[in-house]
Amino acid sequence: MHPLLRSHRGHRACARLIESGQFTSRNLAIFHFDRGIAHKNKNDFDPALADYNEAIQLDPNYAHAYLNRGVLLASKREIDRAMPDFAAAIRLDPKEKLGYVNRAAAYKIKGDWDHAISDYTEAIRLDPNDAHIVFDRGSAYFSKQDCEHAIADFTETFRLEPRAAGALSMRGRCRQGREEYQQAIVDFDAAIRLTPRDPAPYIDRASAYRYAGDLDRAIAGYTEALEIDPKSVLAYQNRGWTYRGKGDFTRAIADYDQAIQFDGKNARLVFARGFTHYLAGSLSKALAEVSQAHALDPAEPYAALWLDILAQRSRLRSQMAKATAKIDMAKWPAPVIKLFLGELTTEAALAAADDSDPKTRRSQVCEVNFYAGEIALLGGANPEAARLFKLAAQECPSTWIELEAANAELKALAARP
Image (tube, rainbow, N blue to C red):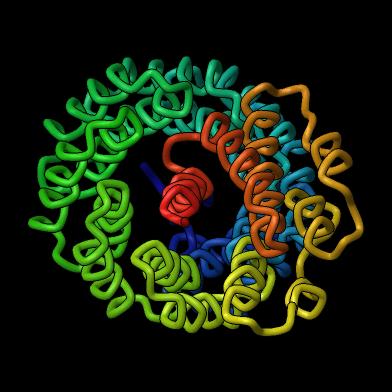
């Protein structure tokens, strides 16, 4: 809806001060402040920073100079240097909402959602009718996965600004995350009516149809988005996923080909094409693609897992220990990786999959069962593999690759003599 950070616009007093000859410290500080804004508007960041520094030196109580210097530093991703400036701006002028808004934006860049929400809340207290701030707090709640509060903020944003299509789309995404697909579709429909030439809500609506299991409508929706933007990587990627869900691997691969043509360094796309080749029965192409995806993003754990599975299927030595060198083993799916490394039993990995959030627990149990099934299959224990794949098929979310792969493995096992 608006730029992430907001500067003070200045006093427009430079020429008047020069003509009057009133060169007090305060007036000179204003001169440097306004000139700093002019430099910033020309993207001359270093001269702008020098002017803001001079303004603060001339007037240490100049709240707006601290504010704009903080914005400048934050825009350069020097967040730790920007934070004291925002704090000073708030201390010197606690009734100015921009100090809180900009510090909240900086906290969002740091991924500190709680502090961001706190500052947005204070800014909203100062100006409850600023739809931009309410939207930004909703986005922070969304990032925190607190959809109850996010939906409330997006609803309020739309009340304050009835043409805020972005608020409708974000509310729809929250509702989709809560599996309220029909309500999500209503929101995306409304966003499309407001911005009929924006492909984003078409993609969002198509994804809601996909998650609801209506794959034909999903494909039609992604196609609509591509009619508006024929170079939309996201639309090609998602339509490829949907074709793959229908078992139409040829069309899925064609869509991934198009997406990769526009974004050749996207490891996720390369992996998706490789996984589709695997489902289509082309092991050599799958191994080559997943190997490339892993090279593009060595910190992606699932590419490493599938690289090992496909390599062992190809009668190559396991490379799991080497492939996981850059993976954060303090996070999920580290227990699954440890299964492949022989460092955990299936029972221990299932215990590690436990979580207070039922959805998270279900997803993690799904993964342990599926990948344990792959280990059993690689070891020739076909009945145990089939048992684990059946458990995975019962637990895995409908759009996860582990569900697709579990069903493919069960079909292949059933076809074996």
